[in-house]
Figure (cartoon, rainbow, N blue to C red):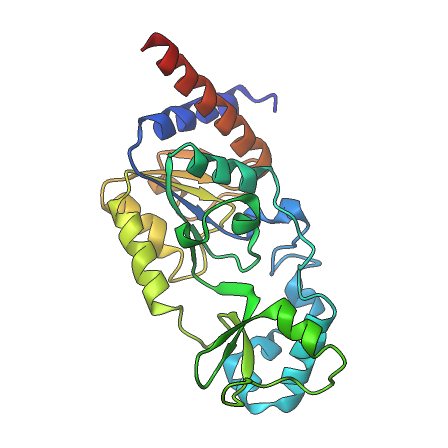
Length: 266
């Protein structure tokens, strides 16, 4: 890494993790770019390849052609079905295994935290998960891959097998509210933690971006690890503008070293 200031901050973050009783990690698109998933708004990102209008809830519900487009995307493998967790995801999962992590709150829909080894019940997905389809009428959920495999040769979008309602990717479209219970639980965890670490979020998409500020306002320490500055940097205790994977790998190594030292001296 070769930056003395960054290395010092990494050691400081590791010390904060070791000392904390209740750590929450908050992640955004920047943690997944190293897994080959472009940021939605960046050149080459999702919105340069697809029409954002096709991801509004109004158009999805009223346009059969929009639903066909979505189905074709899913048949082609979705938006990022082949993506694998990177060093940052694995580091976050390891913090859970070490007993240091209360939960992950994520803006991402790529399922990479679960793939890396985080417990699904400790991952709060504010914008949903592309691995599932949900019926807009009865609310029944279907594993996406099972539906794709079953109806792969079908041009028309399959409907709910229970009530024939419209099946929609179980993610938050433009014009939809965030899932109320998930948002409430995530906010509660944030206000009860003593350390919240933001990884890969520019903190511009609300209401999700309010969550780190709730934590800080409730007395928690706030760390922001992001390639570029955010509007919340001035409220953070530590800001590291660098690669999420490289930083988290080093943070994890430092946490392990400090815990081993404490055990040895005990």
